[in-house]
Length: 447
Image 1: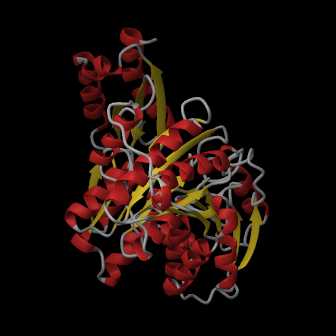
Image 2: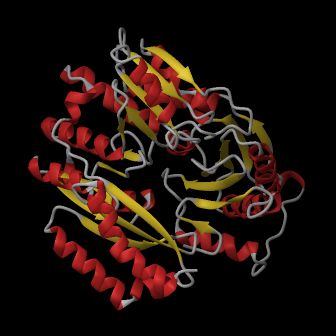
């Protein structure tokens, strides 16, 4: 990771870690870089947090000031920007969003014309410009760019998705939580246009309520609703703020995270003969139960470090077509270049329609092991991770679990934390095993 760019672009508290000036600087470099290379159109989208308008204006001003034309889609999902840059004549795309974070945070994600995060080399160049290590001239006279409203962008994206998933969902009942975010403008309309009966919550964003006790990071309300209306709905969907991920809720109110979706789609792809390499890709945080269930179905699992960026890199490197994370960020390479909550939801519904099976029946065979995660605030996370006593404790726990559990220790990428996660057959055993390791970290390096 760079000084400003992390695994998910530039992220920070609005007007604290991420100011309008910073957005203007990013826009200037993008406008200069792409106008110099002969491509003048850049598409910009945003989610519904209050600061998005401010950052959009600053970013667009910077881009236009260096000679590129800006096309503003308004509110929409992050994967919409990825679709637009790969299907229309844009040099790159930028999304203003902090995904599942509270409204007071925001971020800028930049995507190449291939629909993926811009390369680290370009991120480094932008960072050097921000720090004043390089200077660039403003465009002048007729070379100055222009700024355009582009409300057609979201429509092009949703129409393409409906064409991709030409399903007849008549009689299918969906309960949906849009997190007062980007999905409020796309998801329900797509499902309704395909014939589904949709009941929607949290689709009235006011700039402050995005992800506030709702959506994929706070699914309890929808779970409660599904339990109270058991049998009335086929499926529940909870999106995050920028709609690049979603979590399923079963008719009985059970939460079905990304591990379940990887299991269902992976098995289906194998049955249809389209599971490239007979492999799914996930991260080290995937539940042990997923690895075991995939082995039971003779499907291979490749594991990467945490972050959808690393999942997609592995998929591209080896030609795999499905990967993702527990968070519900699922990448279906046959349909998209990034995680797309709407696409994933439609892929699941398509499997339900194709097989005639309920979501519960499709989940059969996947046993999820209990997990306990403890975050230890430390004075030096690198020293803690390299500590021999900590490593020995991890080995002892893994040996004691005899393959029916594990412990994973990793440093936070953004905070002074060491995260200790244990999986085992019971919650009590998880807590016991995680504390054996966390107590050593806390004792020796606790802040």
